Length: 246
View (cartoon, rainbow, N blue to C red):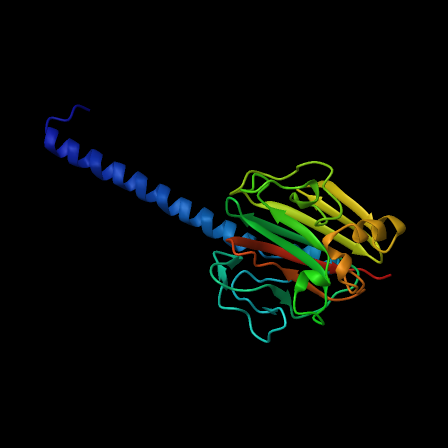
């Protein structure tokens, strides 16, 4: 049908365009909301296997400052992620764990630096004096990095076998397996580090590292999970843990 009233046709076309744009916007909002709801949840299979969430996506319940009773103000739940948004300090889980499997997704600012610690004790005033660290860092860091300082490393002791990180600004998935003395670091589905605590090789590496002056370093068999505040923006989500029996 030919439209004889050009002004009316133009107005109708504008209305249709606005309607289509509105529908597209609503669909995008719904998809974003659905994706947000899917984060920080357990599948029935995960729940049956003994997994539990360490972060619910909405609150900071279950976390506190290292050697503190409350969570530092600089850590917030933002858009479904436990996020370092300002001046803060290291944080730890309220609960402690011995043997476990942990999965975490993390996102980091360019030139950012952070870390995931395990079996953290609080009998020293610095977290890294006593607990091993799975390194989180931008591998294109502003300062040259040694192999043992790259993302996925057992910091300063065991370098990753290769760079399995995604580009900065992407979410990276890390898996940490700790059972007795056996430890594995996985990055985006790739095993990048494997070692045995307290082995002759491990003892030699510690003796040649910055940890040689800290006799309590990595000696605990149970402790908190820790997240490092290194002064940079970093976010964590889908923090899940499954305790394992010996």
